[in-house]
Amino acid sequence: MHRIAASILSADRRRLPDEVRRLVAAGVDAVHMNVVDAEDRPNLSLGHLACAAIRVHCTLPIHVHLRVPASRALVENFAEAGADLLILQSAAGLDAPAMLAQVRAAGCQAGLAFGPGDALDSLPDCLGQLDLVHVSCALAASATRDFLPASLAQIARVRTLVDAAGAGHAIRLQADGDIGLGNIASVATAGVDDIVVGRALFGSDDWAGSVAGLRAAIATARAGRVAG
Image (cartoon, rainbow, N blue to C red):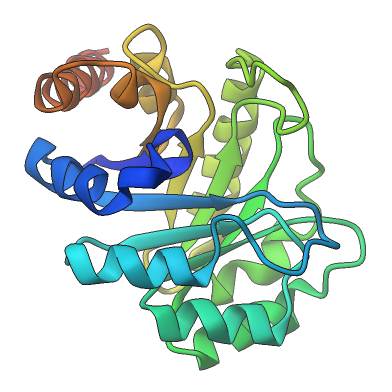
């Protein structure tokens, strides 16, 4: 079953508790936090305190995508704040196995994220420690963060690696980055399990209707894939 996670990067942070309650009522499956501050920022604008505030207002799983350099302190702070899943951004210099071990030791599920054109060389050695692989479908440095159709090939490559590995436990594949009604069927068909949505949800006046529409588009894509 595909799951829909709502990215609160697009939420009104002045009314975060209300926004989270609306997300729960709209029927999303998880809350997704993108931590995107510059690495030298002492206090994250969307950090573990925001995670703790969200935890008070919902029982949905909280996914935290650390786009900043991960550290033991950062992992422990988010774990204590109630995060269920911590996703590390694959990058040069990251000791992924060691950091993923820290995530698991802190009591969270572990994920590893890749950009549209990132090499996947580090993925096979980490699969035994992973609960989820995240693929970004838009460039983080882009002001518009528009969906890149080429990311569908990256999703398919990750799907093949995950399925071939036989890690001994289920590993979900998640996609994020300007996903909405116009492309969610293609993303689902490419092989993802979890889909993160932001503007497609927060740009609507009817959040429940938007979630229902996204689920319907996924179901149509699944039916066509099975029939094909």
